[in-house]
Length: 290
Image (tube, rainbow, N blue to C red; front, top):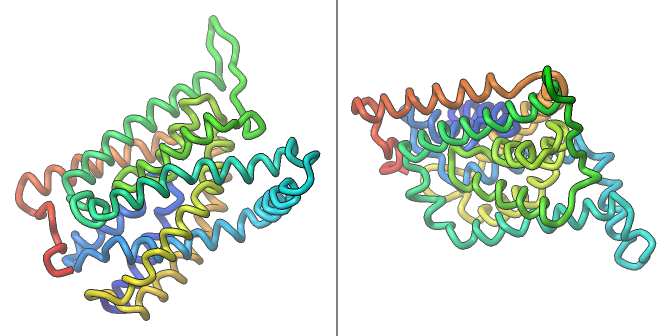
């Protein structure tokens, strides 16, 4: 991998990690369209450490408060009813599904799941799901001629059951094209949470999963055509761009709909299907060399 490739892929990772459009799919597609080797699951997982570092800094006050309350709750019973302490446990509970499924399906994640036809399918299907969830949220918020606006749930109403559902939604993102934020936000909206609550828990829930995945893949970083230098460079690029995207996205969702992302996902999936069907792109473009 050249330094230019690592710069572009780091930029793509930072731009797409927190938007509901799938960073893993975009890394895979960028390489395929450019005629580069597939960067692989290890490169993707390690560069995500950069974007998660951006989450740690952006949400540092929340994270310090949650971690502090959680540790104190281990020895202080009165702290166990504290919302921040409970959030600590809920992040742990919500991280279980992706941990178990990630280890179980590791070979599929690094192989068959990277087929461009599967990516096109997940882009479209999850785009439609996000669109439906967004419309339901908008209907609740706006009400209607014959119905009052419906108040949506906040994170103070999050329990173990919903935490696990969020977790299974996040685990779906092991398949490129699903999108970690897209799946968890869609799940949250369908369960009746506000856009802001679903997005915030999605970002917090991703921290242990992504950091663990990145550390787990460190041993494979120097294998094949991807070397350590470009991987680290891409990770730093992803961090800087990712921080800016988080700040923009958290403001965007308070007043805007997810429909632009829905339209983008569906169009990209259809274009990808057309290119593969026409023989312009191989479903396994770049894999043989990687």
